[in-house]
Every structure is written in C-alpha cells, then in structure tokens.
Image (cartoon, rainbow, N blue to C red; front, side, top):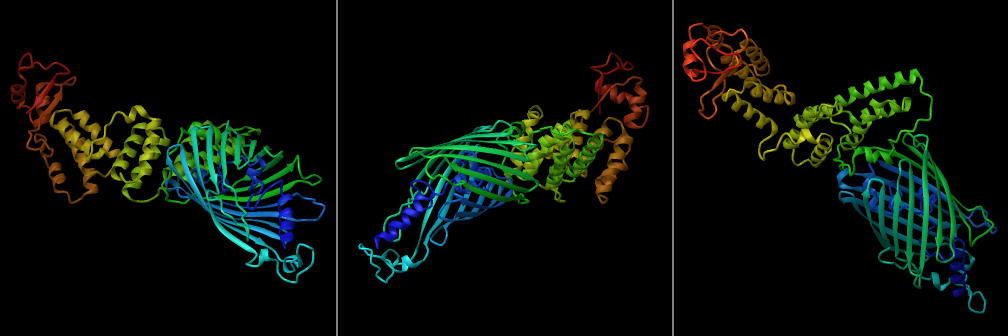
Length: 613
C-alpha cells in the first residue's frame, strides 16, 4: 500500500519543481510572479494577501482580482496542473485594510489544494505597517482504481481501499503569516514576513509539514519603475530573487521581469506585462524553468482586476511623505507622449474650471477625476499639475464633504482657500475645524498637511486650550476696542467673519469699532447686516437708534471704554467734536483729556492720537 502513496508524492512533487511540498506554489498571483515573486517589499495591491499583509495599509481603493494559471504547458503525459485565485481588499483608512481570498491548485482529478485567507494590515506608526493572515489549508486526494484497490508489497491487488486513505482523502489545518512593511524614504521600502508560523502538517497518516518560510525584501521605486530584491529562506533551502517593473504611456502599460536563483540548483526566468485603463487591470506572467523540467512551454498566468472606491466617509491616513515625493513613485508622474492640439488645451482648461467648481462644493474625488481628465488632454498644464498635487491626498482623506453642518462648511472654506492659495484663510479655517472636532484625527492630519505647506502662517497663531480661534479673535477684538486699537479690532472681527459670515457677535463688535472711529454710517451698515441674521436682537436695535455722541459696545468686565482717534488731514477741533458728539461745542472736553499731549488748546498736529472721553 505504501507504493500508492509513494507514486502520488513523486507525481505531485516532481512536476511542479524539484522538491515543492504541499501548499508551496511557484509564486502565487500574476503580477508578483512576473517579477519572480519578489513582492514582500512592494505589496501595493491585492496580492499583498499572499506575500505581506502589512502592505495592505498602503491601499487606498477597494480591489477585486481573479487569476488563472496553467503550470508547465505541454507536459508530454498530458497532465493538467493549474491554479486559480480570487482576492478582495477593502481599505478602511486609518483603521487599516481587510483582505480575503480563495486559492486553489489542482493536478487533474488526482490532487488539489485550497487555501482560504483572511488578512488585516494596519499602519502602527508613520512609515511602519504590521499585518497578519489567517489561513485554512485543505489537502484533497482524488479517487481512482488505485486508491480504491490497494496493492501490497508484492504488487498484488487487495480489493480494498489503501490504508493511506482509510480515514479519508482530505486534511485541513490552520496556519498564519505575519509581516512588517517599512518605508524609510519615499522611494525605498523594506518588507519582512514569516509565513506558516505554526508549520502545520497536512499529511493524511504521516507528517507532511508546510514549512515555515522567512521572506525579506527590498524595493526601490524611481519615478515610473520598481526594482525589487528578495531572499526566501526555509530549512536547508534559500532562494534569491531580483525583479523589475517599468511603466510606460502614463502608467497604462507595464513591462516586468525577474530571475530566481535557488540553493538547490533552481533557476527560473519570469516575464510579464500589465495593462491598466480606468478602473480595470489585466496582468500576464510567463515563468520558464532554466533547470529541471525541460521541453515545456513554461507556466502561464493571467489576471483581471477591478479597482474602485474608496469607502466614503472613512478617515484616511495622513501622507507619510510630501505630495511631490509621493508623486515620484505614484500614478501622477507626467509623461508626455502625444501632440497637444489647441482643442486639447481648451478641453483641459474647461475641465480645470469644472474641477474648481467641484472642489468649492466639497466634491474632492470628482474634482480630482476631472483634473486627471484635463491632464490626459494636456499633460503640460501646470495649473492642473499643481492642483492635482493638492487634490490627490485630500481626495483620499475626504472624498466628499458636502454637508450643511457647521464643521463641513468650515472645512470647505479652508480647503477651497488651500486650493486657491489663500494661506491665511486655509490655516485659520482648518485650525478652527480641528478645535470644533478635536476627536477627528483626520482633521488633525489635514491640519498637519496644510501647515507643512504654509509653515510661516501656521506659526502666527497659537492655540489656547479651551478656546477656539473664533472665541480668541472675538475676545481680542473687544479688548482692542476698549484700548482704542480699532484697526486691530476690525481685523480680528473680519477674520471671524471669513469663517462664519453670520457670527452676530463679530458683526456687532465690527460695527462698534467703526462707530468708535467715527464712521457711523459704516457702523450702522454692519449692524443692519447683523439684524438680517438676527431680526429679534434688541441690543442691535438699540445700537441703530443711538446718537453719534454715545459709544456703543458691550461691557468688558466693568472696564470703561477708551476711545482713541488719530488726527486726519483737514481735521479741526470743531470737526472732531462734531464727529464724536454731534456738535461743535464739545471740543473742550476732548482737550481736557489730551492737554498733556497737545501744544495748546487749538493746535492738533496731523497724526496725533487723541483720547475721546
């Protein structure tokens, strides 16, 4: 009976390679296979489930991949060794990414393997990710005349099932992988994985161990290329892999290749290509053994993928590197390979305007889509290039922010200012948003991104615990009015009104500052605007009925109002008296309050600061 087992093991192990045991495929996946299987330090698509689940945190979009492969096409005995898989990844922003997949390998009806995988990857600190995969491994043998009619050591048929299969023809065990993914620089990645940590045995009656595997990889990604190196270590066996991936035509087409060198005289060449258009990808790989099995057409694999998403409303991770550095290795690299016509330029210009309208409405993902279309028409449009740099991380963090809530409105103002290159409003608005919703880490990440863009402006304002930016500005405005610093008070109020145009307190104090300066018409105009937002406000109505001689401002903890005025060209004592008291006879009151700073009762030098009692 042991001969049946021996026959099966020889068949299964000899055909795929020299000594490949159960669940030891030749580089699963298609894109990874085409670069030799050196994917541990790349892991930027759904194939990370196979190679390094830690890399899943880098995925921004949902991805569904299905592949099929035929091993050693053209075997003389007609054997059909094939594999297939279906993989799905769903990113959840700062909460990591979840992946799942089903993989199968079969040799006609004689033998099959199935793996069901559940993966999770998370960025634990900036530039460092951790991931784990749980796997269910199932080992199944088929039925034929030999398995059902055992043969003894003398070669005689016994008319009974071989004892190898007496307890069944399948075995299932659980296994697991863990991995790390580290990005020391924007173009360099390191990956480390331990696969099959528990080394389960899937043998039916004897030990058939799925070996623990250590993988360490390095990748370098200059602009539109990926260069990869990897070492795979098992007991008494070490493989080295080198591979490359080069993109062309705005990353629509990719050419790939790789070489595997093993300690057991393994030599294998890999070639492949990929095509990406819109949300669809097609990948092909050819694996050709240079030693071992000869006279075949190699192993051929084909995959089809769909990329979509991301999930709306999910708080995204902050960028690990500045946008311009990320773009060197991302989809945004500009490669001009077309003649740009005037129609192309006009179409691009119109799409940029559409994009601007969309981001002002808070539709950042759609805005980015239109910018990408604009760059397809005219890759040299610098405005579109700059806008894409800004939009790309924002669209990932906040695909859409169109709500009527206060926080949404503030965010839209800040981001519109950011895109329109208004640094003061951008910094103020996003700072205010973080103060209104401190629990939202995505807002803090957004603020970090914007302050990196405008560091000087961010440093001009210091946060005070317990007070929002608006509260601070309103308090400063009131104090400035009482201290006679009306211009500063006006500036503080206008800063608030940029953020909240209907802020009643800001409008009241702005009017008070104009009133104190003697610009009564301007003051009443501002108060009427406040009354439009709050028609029942009694204090505003009192302000509007006030005589010009009456100071109008809220009390500041019982502190008396100090009004100040700088003498203007053409001013006379009578004019100043009339401005503040409505008559020309109250100058003596002003003089008594300022006689220590005036040369005489009737001399008022230009620019002289006066206290108005």
